[in-house]
Length: 97
Ligand SMILES: [Zn+2]
Image (cartoon, rainbow, N blue to C red; front, top):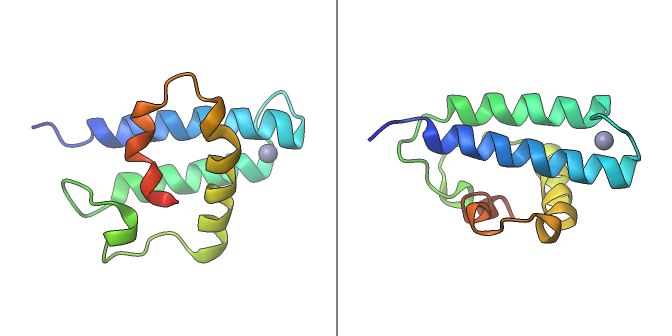
């Protein structure tokens, strides 16, 4: 089993969701600084997740997202989730909710 595939996919999904969210909520053509920051931060945390396979974050002993960032991710998910054209890969992300 290749470690990392899952994480790469999660980062890609997160990036798509952020651009949907940012485009409609922040009305920007590209990710605004705040959303960019959130993406970079999340990607960094995902890449550094010490658990393989990665458990659902709510069951994870490592709380790598501070509450303010988790709150923002949750908001992005809630907004962009239903707009995603492919929903099932989101199963891996729904553990942020
Ligand atoms: Zn934004």
